[in-house]
Amino acid sequence: MSINKILSALADDTRRAIILKLREGKINSGELAEYLGISPQALSYHLSKLKKAELIYETKYKNYIYYELNLSVLGELIVWLDSLKGDNDNED
Image (cartoon, rainbow, N blue to C red; front, side):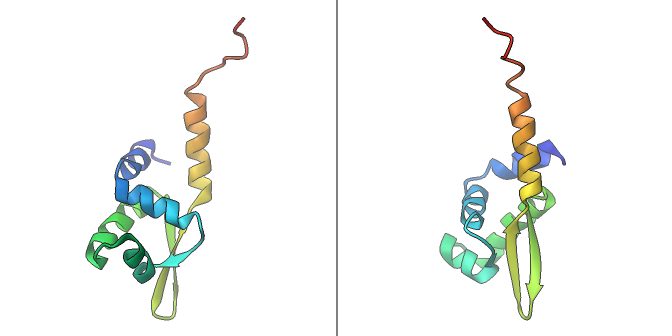
């Protein structure tokens, strides 16, 4: 997991909107572009960034490509972010 790639991918509003939509379940690229109100070309750019960060993955079925969240990478990111808090159990 590359924290830099993940944080870079999540720094964009459109990519965060994609992540939030994918929380609802898998969706094909056409439906996702329509939901976001962006062109297929713009969506492709954002999906590429999210795939490189391993935050999403795609599956192909017939003529459609479906996208889903990669929950294991999100879990690893949460653990990493949580580790930044340090050990607060020893405070008075």
